[in-house]
Image (cartoon, rainbow, N blue to C red):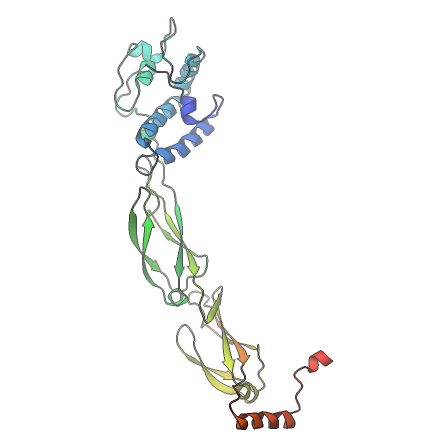
Length: 306
């Protein structure tokens, strides 16, 4: 029979507190749980961990074990009870009891064979599974209108799983969609964690998003800006009419209230005017520009010369 160093199994010092031991168990139980672990020999390591925790979490068992360690036993070395030893297992079952169930010969020699319902900590502790976090890229039109997406996630033990996810209308950059119970499975019959999908809104070739407000640069002709006009402007919800005031300038911003992302406190669409010169095609266009230069008293660099 081999001596087992339970402190080494738990990765803690002999002076570790009960909280430190419990914390170490939680971390290692997640690492080696057969339902989620990809480690080699995960099931054997998980059982060994549970046995160590069963001893070290119990003050009486731990004290008895610590007294035994004082005799200089080392991990993996041959174990023989010291002379006159009266540890719990030796009193109850006699030295040399063969192992059974989830516990080793060494454990049963010390503490006796565990009966129904008295199993190790790994069977007693119900631990909630970890939450999972993924990023979900959506187009701006999808963020505006909402919809259902089928996503594929890498499962904990290999392979993929598919989920249908409802994307609510009006989702914004960085918003989380929570799917209850779709995270990692729990340990010891504990509940599964949750899945959080963080929304990333994909760049758009025309629109720029700022919170719930949508920005759009709209080209206008010089005469539309100078004389005023009513133009058609696209929005995520369809085209609308926008009245350009006479004397409008390039860079001037106009607001279409409620035409941004929907929801409580809907956003607006901010239209920024961009004055665009038409192409000059032929002598007639050139002559028209010469007449404008001659008749209009306009210095585009007046502010620089002031």
